[in-house]
Image 1 (cartoon, chains in turn blue, orange):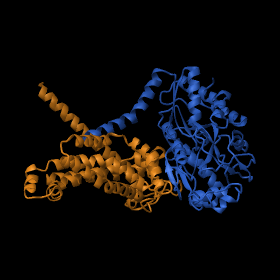
Image 2 (image 1 turned 90 degrees about the vertical axis):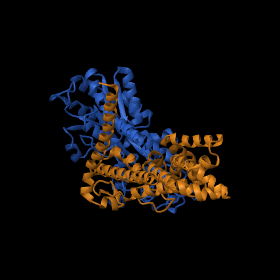
Image 3 (image 1 turned 135 degrees about the vertical axis):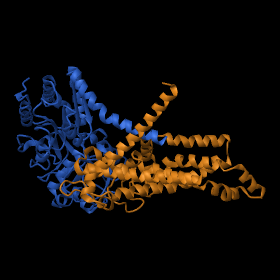
Length: 355
Length: 283
């Protein structure tokens, strides 16, 4: 019985590892109208909507696997997807680790919000220092004096704080820790930024939905999640102090304002803690990544063309309106034209792919 | 070719296939774990520092090994009296009666409930209960995970113990009764001494089950990567950290996770082997 179980498990693992890869490849040869992508869960609510709409309109079968940013990068590296998705851009070192040059195309801007569960508590304002101290484990109770400074109108209960973080590696964690590293030297030197961290305090839950669920079920909890996950579950979120000292709630306008600063030509930039006084401080681009030279692995020209056509559609108005529906900020004009330029640099056999 | 021959080839080759699969798994685990053991040596096992942040990466598995052993050990302690009573109930007191049949079936049913369902139940029912009892402020932690594990391994401990207890020869029991022994004395002096190796082995096998349990544990243990400070503190287990972190892992971190898998594999194999040896040497 034991052996049978073990072998069944092994077989199912083998099937799980091999199945999709082979299917995807053989499908590609049979039928040019399939696009496969995988990666970050942070923009998944947007991608799910957009992929479905595009599929319905064009009859092309699009699949997106929400396997995390790291998984998206690895899938692209292994060439099992047409494009990957990530919330943390690849640094120069990881870029050079890829088989050939890749490009980043931002698709929307998402905010990471601080969601909490304290009975009767709404409209909480958190300063940079508050957030640092809560996640450092220095503020451990909701009635801490430091919290009262900016929230004189709130009557805080005597309730221990439970910090909830991501137990899996995640682009959401990267954005949040990048923000904390920018506002706190102490955080930068003792914890730092990364997709997964050595947390000073707190409990971990898997995925954005896991953190959202844990906060919702735990009195006294506070944690960071992709904004859509808080909005859709009606979890209260905090107003966060930005660089200019204003307390900002994550609206589409305030998230969009984060991208008003200089954007590098390759769009590899973190938007956290921006200068703009109206900007929400914890937000970031989420990117699609793909190979600049599309002729690899026996890909057909049609397949490459379809990939680029779809990505162009994704950053245009129709799709960007969908992003708004699920509380992501659409790309500002400047950035979407930059994205177009980047997509126009995609080549097939060294020649620019034109539509 | 005769039917007999075909059957023999078929059975032989599928058995070899299973062997090859197991060997392949061990090989790939060892292969994947080489980089982390090269980097840290034995410190990988003896250090509790787990820091995946780029620049200050350090991987030590001790907190997960301890988390696994404590949750499983706790599960065993909680499960022991329950499983022992249940197996006496089914295998001795109400042997072959309708009620023991019902109880036995229900306990076996527990074994068929998927791990994720235990996790859900633990998350929405057991955890709030732990909070309401004032044992912990948020309900996640070693204790809650141990509790859910205990429930999950009860059927494994019970079914083997029941079988061993009901196998104690009737002649022995009747002899004891004829000497004027009470039912309790029969259990304490005849049944338990006769069945003790089987009972012991059943707990060891149940412990082995608890070690590798993943989904329900990860939903309740709190997933904090440090040695738990107490029973009601949060922690993490080997299976749970792998399930949580493999998605984004690469390079040394991936190797560390595979290394943890290898350690878990060895611990579980060792526990199972001990259980089997005990059964064999006493039966």
